[in-house]
Image: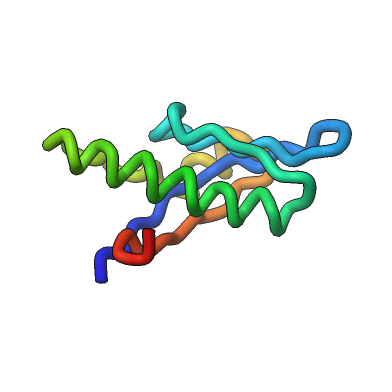
Length: 87
């Protein structure tokens, strides 16, 4: 079991919730609801990390949640956790 955790910004926009990972901008995704956005965020995170590891790249260190929240008090920030063995 290989668990990874990265913080992500969840931004409601019109009829969707956009998801950005400050440490992995290529993992951008969205969903129609917060629950769907979280599910797609997990999938995007797993795909991005597995791709990096498959190309012998190091995964970046996750940003500190407390620092992100202090710098972005108006944003919704959630920790996205995935087991890479499940994807």
